[in-house]
Length: 261
Image 1 (cartoon, rainbow, N blue to C red):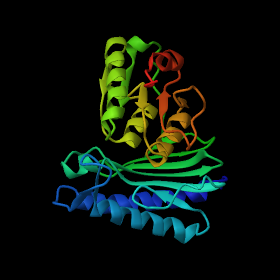
Image 2 (cartoon, one colour):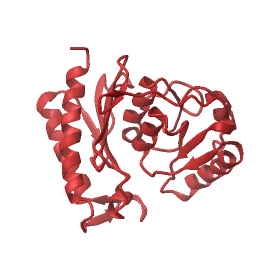
Image 3 (cartoon, rainbow, N blue to C red):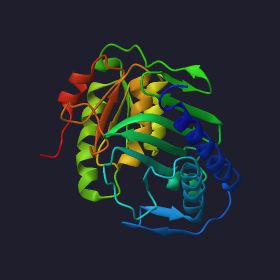
Image 4 (cartoon, rainbow, N blue to C red):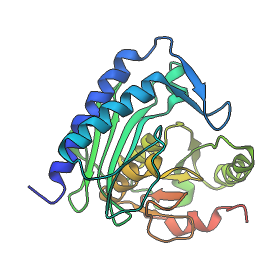
């Protein structure tokens, strides 16, 4: 068994258990409340999913800290760290839109090393381990082969904050003028997985949290893609943005981005 295979196995169990809860709850009425603003929602399913995940991770690895979206723990950037998004795409979930996921990632010295993204409605299980490739339901993933920006289909996230949306909207305009098209999923983990599987050529993520990006970033890298921050450095969990691509026109795409500065 490889270095992080046991960690990945536990993360898969946690993601699928949480995913079963989410799948059974989908389409029902849920109590939701706002967090940072009216666009930023949390439901009781987010909290229950997180509890399932943390209990499973702590059962097998009690000494590894967990940083999760709905928890008040702070990222201590320790040697080993779990990053958990128990329901990525909460607004989609509450609106009856099937685009949401569970994301779990183990990082070591700020770098993702084992990752799971589970799309429970379609039972799509994305996994990756550093140096061992990326898979969906056991099938090896490979990024798209598009060579130029004119061929690229790119995904982007929106922010909850207006000032960040202005930066994103400027970049959406640039993408629309210079690429084949733009897609919005509103689940960062799924956006990145669609880059890994070759459905998108790139994903532009601005001002997100580490638990949103970490699992998907490793999955893209292990599928043969390239993942950097917007400055062009290899992505790590302290970065608040990422650019993930099939690596074919990564620098051209990065040079086009407006950073707000």
